[in-house]
Structures are given as structure tokens and as C-alpha cells.
Image (tube, rainbow, N blue to C red):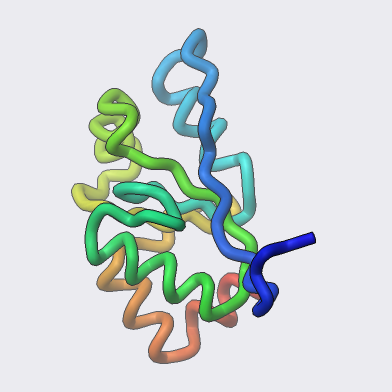
Length: 121
């Protein structure tokens, strides 16, 4: 039974990563763990920056299930993902293994309706 009376699906933090794998394999494992993955500062319940909070709020508004990874808890992944994605900032939103973008792009897509149509495709 959920404590959430609104039945918002929300985000589920990823807490463990296979540290025996190389860094790229770790990143691919995280990205592949869900259709929607957000690399963010903090957790969905406690975002540690305004951009991460905004991204979580938009995804919650769309009522989609997603997983998150707190980059503040793993500096190797935090730095390695920037190279992997060729994207320098956080949060980073992935859908079905592909980078959608950061907060600015996600916000634009949210307001135009493109984010909902993409994530619910």
C-alpha cells in the first residue's frame, strides 16, 4: 500500500552499481535499467539542485515511472558520464538508452508537449 494518495509513480533511486565492471559498462548498466533514467544531483525525494528538482517535478507531472542515479555519490560515474554522453551538465535524461538532454531541453520539451509524447511513445 502506498503512502502517496495521488498515486504518482515517481522516481526510484538506483543504489548499487557493479563496481567490478569497467566505467563504460557501469554507465550502460544504469542507462539500461529502465526506459527512463535521470542522472541527477540528489534523489527524487531530496534533489540537491534546482535543475534536478525541476526535472523530477516534470517527470512526476507526467506520471511516468523512472529511475535516478545520484551523481554526488559516485565521482567516477559523474565524470565518466560527461565523456560518455558528450554532455557537460546535470541532470541528464535518458529514454530507451538515448540521451534526451539536460534541464533546458527537457523544460522546453515539457512546455511544448514533446516530452510527454516522447516518454509515452
